Image (cartoon, rainbow, N blue to C red; front, side, top):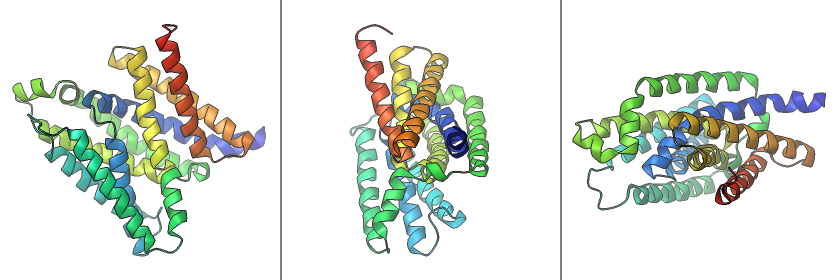
Length: 272
């Protein structure tokens, strides 16, 4: 038992930090109907990291992080500028194209790198099991600062997520606030992908938000549900991965899927 807590305490704390910010951002993503924006930004961040890797910088080095962050900012600008008041093409379609192109570009870049397959696997599943307390504290400070900014500007951010047409009519600079949202979102995704990988980050973003939408109405209650679901899936995934000797990130992703199925069935049967 002591070995379990010694090995898994920092990864579990990292999961709680990821849950804290991603459950909130997931509410915006659900309201906007841009479900795959997290995957797209994560893949853009992965593209930046792989380019840095090809140039000789480690995937988890400071230079590699800056490469990933720079590409993510570029993606944020693209997503902000491609949102129009009258959309002839759904924004999700543009996000999907960006995701597909970024994914293909990652494969092309890694095809030129030695041991590219192993690096691609690391980008997908991250290094959650090896995360240390300094990294946990660092991302907690970053996410805490971003969370504070979103709380201070919650009114325009919620307005453009919930009812963009009304926001345009009220004179809110939607594209400017969109850029702010996607840039801060990009910072979170870049840091999260480096730690947890693309698949885990997507799960932390979407599954708690879906469960919150199913079980609650107000933003506050949805957040509480999302945080609870994220903590539960993380704890179960970590326990399963430790005692079954399975990859931690992949175990948590599968437990997120299982929890979502259970919540969906219980909600369908009107038991919760």
